Image: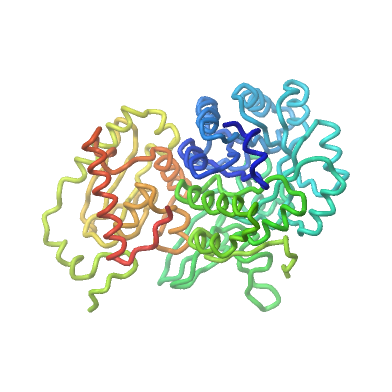
Length: 339
Length: 178
């Protein structure tokens, strides 16, 4: 069964992550409509050790997904280095040859190469491009034929409604997982601490620069030698990303930007559908099969329930409580309740 | 003293008793298992990149022994060492035995048990991530790791599944992620 035939039967396309071929299989078996992944190099924004796909694994993954009626989307979504674009153009060629359904791209040079050399390759604009206005989305659509835009996680539902009224491009939004609170593709916080860029080398808070130290029950999480947070005995831990660090400012210690929480917008699926959103996305290519299976199953149940007017908010939250960073959830910017 | 197990750990009385039990030759068995896996699926170990030479200390905190794994493909080794001789290593992964076993068979999500602090990581986080992702891709069942095949493997895995589930319940271990 191809996605073209299943797409009519679901109100929202469920786009799920895969960091390994085993995770891709788990996502397909759990009911993902589409699965996104990337190559094992700097061309994608989850360039972590041991993660991602070789070209051979991608080709096999496309076939595995197809057997389950799912499509594969490949992220080539970092920004190519000036004067050294070969790694990115080679990745584009490999995606085109793999039979993947679409490629997720952010960089103008990569978009141009793909549109010029592989005009039949479907292009999705990565969240890394941070396109949130009708002008920018329409520019990408008109110039490169981009057919879908992944929206930044800084927009409210009302802003998405307004945007969708002014564009013809499909929109995809994140609904679960790690929450980037900055304008993606333009954040350099991690670069300052580690010297490595999320946008150029694909690693925000690279694990090689992370260390944890437990002392008398208190766990210190550090990035590039800087202590980002300390967790007392019994307190749930988080990954030391600077935007979720606990800092002292004006005599007060607090999470200045965002708490170490995970996005969970399960309660907003009906609103997102009504807002004209085409696809919902789960974050977490760096997470394991157990996470993928559990989260995909929960959201597939929620998406299937939409047609019958069911809201599965409580069921989804109960199923996923243990999966979230900090053990807590937020609806992020969708409800604009941030401080 | 309490007999109520604490968050996945063997009860203290059992932990003390295990100190007097002669250790089984697990190092030898596991070394053979990892080398067999490397022979069958060499591509799997490519994921480790430079970390195939790393020394991973696997520390089941409720056992009197620790393991040192060097996942160097067909030259891989697993040593079982008394806790008092625990080496430094490139990275150390510590947790109750049932949690560590759950990471191998995919019962637990590594990040989830780390966030809840049922798992503790020391040392090179990059190395741990490379090992975790390689194990994820290996997608191994316990019997498969030990080299069993066909019906015997199915039977052993089914038995292991049930046994581990009962152990998790009895030991008050974290809820399975799958």
